[in-house]
Amino acid sequence: MVGSYLEMRVTYYVEDGRFDLEGDLRSERRSEIIGDFLRTQIGKGKDESPITERDEYNIELRWFPENDGIEVSSNTGNELLRDSILFKILEELK
Image (cartoon, rainbow, N blue to C red):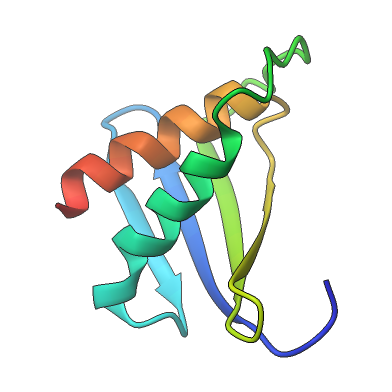
């Protein structure tokens, strides 16, 4: 997607399950954006890609206000792992 966006960067620490959130996305919008993205993943099918083993994972969400689109990138190697981390964070933000 092209255009201006707001972003949220997630660092998830595997050892203790902690996470840090950074970026210019307002804190009150974070759970909404994560939830909206996770809803777009329903029914996409199973990701057979191997999980990249790490001590910490990084996920970046970019929200485009002009069309409400969301792009996501991560170093998890697998969409199921990425979405599981985001779901855990969503639950803790509520």
